[in-house]
Length: 419
Ligand code: IZC
Ligand code: ZN
Image 1 (cartoon, helix red, strand yellow):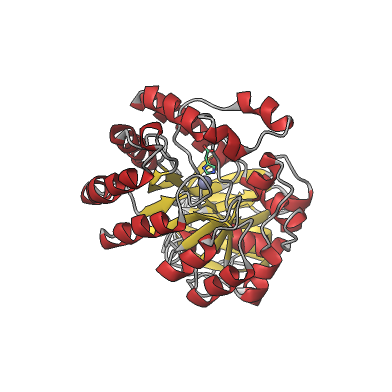
Image 2 (spheres, rainbow, N blue to C red):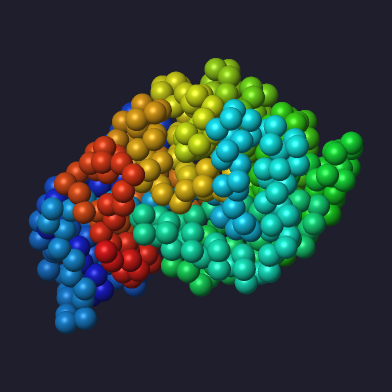
């Protein structure tokens, strides 16, 4: 074996070694720390992880890139498993209203919010959406993110725009170092012309859009914004069950603002993840734990929506829900690409320990994209998606918040970002 890249003398190597499945309870605190660690990479894959010196059967030559990990922290590439990456425009015009106390759902009900981004996205060309989303991906990569989920949902009943969004996501996944996983989320808001009969739109999604998305291989997941004034629990169930029949794995925006029973629904239909859960009921949390539904928490939205309400991460972890963390990057409720900031929010606001945060942002994020066999930990055979942070320990990243601590990012065995 001949290594393409070696990272050696790593002060603190957090491997996240463990089973390739969502980690729960105490497992979330076991981050597989190796001091004086060494990692070797060949052909995009990890071929050795250990302590001290490399074994003799791993050869190097003048083409091998040697990275010195002295004074550094190394972790698996971060996984941002919930974003609305591809969209037109931005919504900073909502800030003044939000500061006056106007609520997110009221802005939406008045035809703004998501619906204003729908207009901007419909009016944008493929290339404009591509360029805007690429800028975001570049930023994400700089923060140590190597895999990103991207939802459609700014075309709604304009199916061509939904398709355009998913095609942009897929093309960026091919062109950009970051892997982009596409999710169909036509059920993101009720389009104006279906205002008085939303069930008709649900029928269009089920009978026309989902089959086409599946046949054309445009998405891996199907998601619904289950929320008061948006899609009901019944409608959500209907859409996600149809998606399942067509091979789209179910995810759900659940109990973000109102307690509607989204967590319970996620358990009932076997969602891969239920996301947000700020207002999830205790019963819903228990049911999710029993059914193995991942709780994907997005604390940046609590911060930005100024709701004063937080997901109960401690209860979820105690009950055995595998918790993941994501930015929810979108122009309305969380305009940031910075996963490191989200990790600080998760610890400081949701009281997750640094170890739980690291697990949530790596292997549990990978599991919430059904990629836990390939990414999410630094183990032999996995993809060489690795971040080098210029910090003395992982806690430092969380504690010293709001700035970028990334030194290098390795994606598929290549250095793709360097400070
Ligand atoms: O554009 O507001 N929550 N959907 C559900 C969003 C936030 C995105 C947006
Ligand atoms: Zn979202």
